[in-house]
Length: 446
Ligand SMILES: C[S@@+](CC[C@H](N)C(=O)[O-])C[C@H]1O[C@@H](n2cnc3c(N)ncnc32)[C@H](O)[C@@H]1O
Image (cartoon, rainbow, N blue to C red; front, top):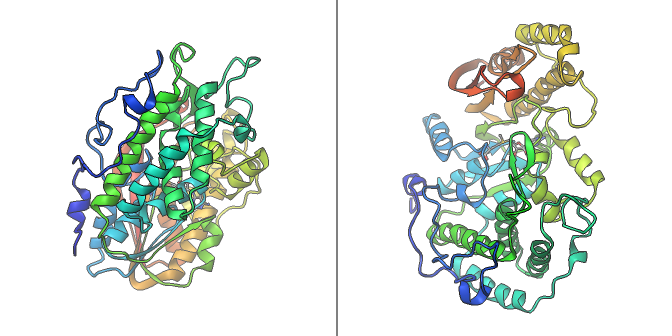
């Protein structure tokens, strides 16, 4: 194999002289008073240790490539096809490609689906180098047109009557220029690559930061707002970081990777090709909606253009949160632990911060049961399903996700069911912060 996984897994910090030159001090003009342009060699990724492809977009919930290679290795034979119904940033897709294994991945968030597509697409460094030159030439002559961002919610762009905004006006103008130039790129793979690069730096070039609890304004944000030069610097640096991985792995095996942007609860029903390994980490039932976390990217890059779009996207997500009202049904299989948990939650309903949390928890397991039903249909006789799942806690009632899934899997007829705790996670501040919650691997086979 030309690119063995060890090579992929090793940290990539080399300086590639072939990388495009981005906005140095000469081309970006003088750094503004609030700018951070340093003029440093932008072809080198300076933030230290990171893994190839993982560093294209910071996705905290990604599992490690080692997990995917270990899961594939545990089969005892070379897999032909791997499925991941919750693609996220595409760890299983790109790792499968590097292992020369075909893969199918489903991801509901259209921006994340593009992150995955960009990683596995047949881009070449030559194409990107010439696109970067065209892009810079076009950008230099582009007039800023804020109308380009008219679809954004009111809090996004600075205006005199507002007291909060995510992007200062001059950064928004620069963003509008970037978006117009990106949209004029003809080659879809190249266009997607540029869009993902811009998505990767958006929050760092804004007045907010995003964590598990959502979006927050930075401390003293009004005094320390980002500048257009910061956007130029971060874009150029991120472009070259991702470019390095394209260049270094250009001759990797091109196995067939299918990326489906959709809801895996229904998308899996359409799949016909059997898989040797079905590996995934679903959202945990902790009321955290990924649509909120990646909201800035979804709006600015135009994946959603109205609150109706936002609502429609949320409707397609796993029922792991109560951000929107939906119908709730419970699993059809048997789980004594789930029954006990739902009774305990029902008794504490008044103490819960949202009264429909008990129903949400039941619906969460129905959604995962659907995923397991389809996974069972698609799994070859000696194949494996590997899930990374995490517990949650509401009003002191612990949701033992691995135990419940194991019970449901047995009741569905899976012959091989094992669970293994791999990590202790701290619960949310809302839950007292000090409780330890388990993260586990659930492994299933016929
Ligand atoms: C824990 S993350 C997966 C991380 C992934 N293993 C990686 O390495 O990047 C869960 C993902 O499931 C996605 N998701 C939520 N509901 C979904 C659905 N109904 N269908 C497909 N994906 C969904 C979320 O958008 C999120 O990206």
